[in-house]
Length: 306
Image 1: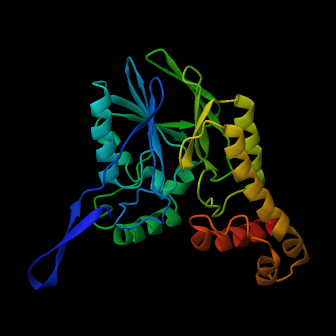
Image 2: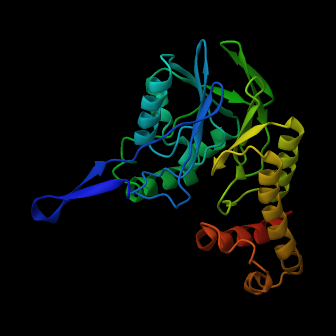
Image 3: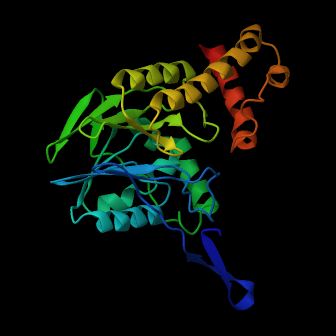
């Protein structure tokens, strides 16, 4: 069943009824996450295509990422209240992509302090961010609308940072430019959980966009050095075998680079290089048709610029 039911009104109009539910999964003694759908964002799924998580401490709740619409953030807050009486005191943004940040304003309303990597300042003031929000108000209406705004961080992080809340340490590392210029990852040693953001994808084709694929591969090496027991990716189920799931994202990025490099360097046509590549390992995965060709083209262009 979809997330919306439409009730017919007079003159053929319809009114969306909100039935999409978030179901937090407990992955460690004090850590939970909600898993977005392996789909493109839409009005039907309220842009619920990415993950978010939270850690309960004795002095408040720390949330990682804010989901893709204000309504989803409201639902996450409601689910957190079912788990604990502690208030949400902090939100750490792994990167400023729409599906991770359009819910920020709801956390701001309840008094949470927002942390993000400093390069995010450039994005939220950019024409790209402005136009994306304008389009999202149409594409994800009514859940993203004129009242939806981009929210800046209260604390911009430009180096490794330790955040201690309720005796729980959150090790925040700058790892971009990788998937995005402003990537952060968040490790909670007491829980042995790493929030990897979109540095790690599971169960679907990654979204590369204008990523720095070389930097992204290096960031995956940094994740492995931490040796977490559990990784919560930006998309897909949580991982109890981080090595295998990190390898999936790494191998995909490496294959994009290997299959596109010669054509990019020799200035051969992209279409020929794409057709000659063997995509059989990936073509059965969710979002292959939506993302793979664009990913390959962006890597082709980025190699030319290196």
